[in-house]
Image (cartoon, rainbow, N blue to C red):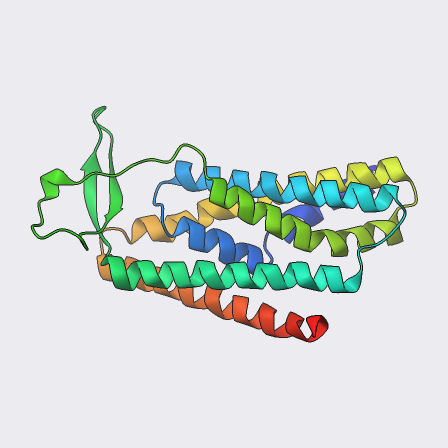
Length: 232
């Protein structure tokens, strides 16, 4: 039984590496360039993902039922639409905002690189740069919620086929969710490294961002096209 629960944790970590999850967190991370900020995004995504995954899974398992195929496909379709918007957002940010990077020093003396746009400025003055640091990434939490709902169907089927005990099934899903939190948190750090390293070269960083945007958009279109058949 211990091995089974450990497997749930490890599968949860592997689950974080699925293409749609990577695309979403990469598009989110493309806006930020500090490890601590993207670490928070990865953690919040994992919490949102685990919350809906465990909630939906618990309800279905306790009711001894499964999520209808058309509902599961609609949730996947919704994830595809979300990825399309995320990909377009990244591409739009590069083209319209004319993003570039510069060193910024806080009052405490800590210096790091920031993305900055001068699309609405007539005169460029590096001393007038202002930016804000958001306190909580609600958008990332919502994306995690969406992925958790979409992934709950497959997890429930796997759990029902493998485990007969309701209490063990719930604990398995919880460990699966925790594993996905750990996995996505680690991935968010890994994604940040090349983005942060390229900050001193605006063209390279924008190229990486463009790649993330195009791949996210392409994956979203693929998911939508694959699930549309089930919704007709």
